[in-house]
Image 1 (cartoon, rainbow, N blue to C red):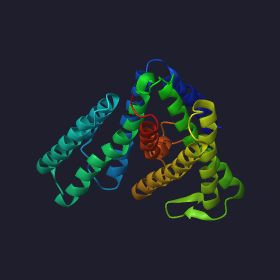
Image 2 (cartoon, rainbow, N blue to C red):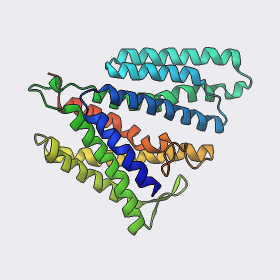
Image 3 (cartoon, rainbow, N blue to C red):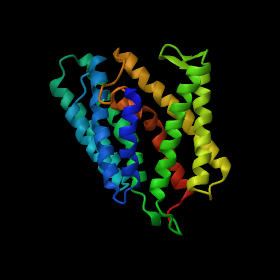
Length: 276
């Protein structure tokens, strides 16, 4: 019940920020998700024995999101260069156990890559103007993002209910004992069908095969992202990354699939709708 109530509250807010004329509502939510997710990641890293340089990671994440708003890859590259050098410099003066220095600096930088950089692709997508294409496509960003979230959510929903109904064979028992091969196939099929449905609702110009393939790829990548986050939690010996969402766990528990799929929808949109 908690999961359902949380979804009933969160989903309308998400859709409002996606479809509102002002894209910065979504940017604000995206930045909040990045900061909370990064805090959870650094907590996991600390439990695993690392000492991430949190302040450097938070500042770099803000810079990455800002660069994503304006689609400035050079700014993002400069941010990571500065973060790597800064984290190493800080570690030189604070290291108590030098054997953990490599892991601590790596965790600092990887957290920003894993969360800020990957979620930044959605921020860039939300900032896509209608006149990005010629002729202009009304509500282009909102349509793309709704298509994206439909595929990701149907992956989770299809995998969950298929697994509960007919799941028998474990998919990755060491990482996530509850997931099954049957459930994974159900999620894969559900995502492909969501992509096809989105084509007929939003993008009739997209070939049906494109939509099916995009949904299928999202269905695979989303489940890998879910398992990847489970791997991090197992390594840190925790069940959930946090408890910000009743019944759902932490921020990372909610965006783990999104992180792996965000670059896919971004680059697909740029290939499908080349800049006019």
